[in-house]
Image 1 (cartoon, rainbow, N blue to C red):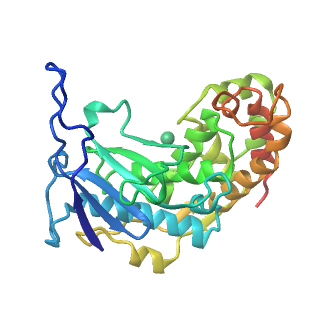
Image 2: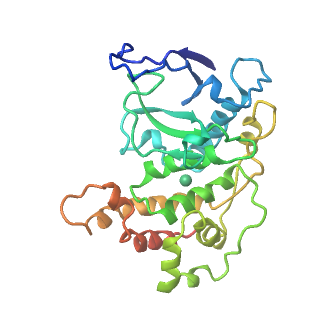
Length: 301
Ligand SMILES: [Zn+2]
């Protein structure tokens, strides 16, 4: 682990227009843990606890730890496509997480589907990036894991309809959270074999986790387990475990859904006139909905 401080360079510090005053930005600090870099200004971190006295706020380390923990689960245990090794994002080498003031953000976290061509920790490297609010506490909050899962999704497929994108990312929070009661998966497929039910589902966002993705996982009897070795390995600075339990329903099913979606991309983009590019509009186009649904329902465990 290392910490680097660097001054943000303000180009043209001398501004001749009298009313425009650019204050030099405070020093940004960069904390690295493996491929994850957390970038923050000292004064933005409210909880300054530093139990291990390494001059990095524990909360900054804990954010990186949560992301690395779920990254290892998806990549090495369940063999999901690795966003750092995706043909969509050539030559990216790291994941940068910017911490921003909550008041300047609409939501507490976002993950970007664009590549940062000059990463903040090294302008010669390309990075994927996430933004988190300074209110996100990884001990109570799976937002870092949720945002990392969006990077997995972006690397796996261009489809981006919200009931899938947000619904499945909300499902993924089960990796680090303990879900108290899972919806039962009984009569799951029949529930979605009519158009009104499908149309309702396609309007959902996060709620699709409860109405669709968890029941899908349970209906396929996919009760996956996070190995003890990882549960013991990933701990926050205060010693508490990142993984709240070892149950992770649906880990194999969701990977297969993502793969099925990837295999349907050509067919899906052929629905649109003109070139075959996945523009922002096309990624979320309503014509994708039935294709995504068919992919999900086609997966058996
Ligand atoms: Zn999300």
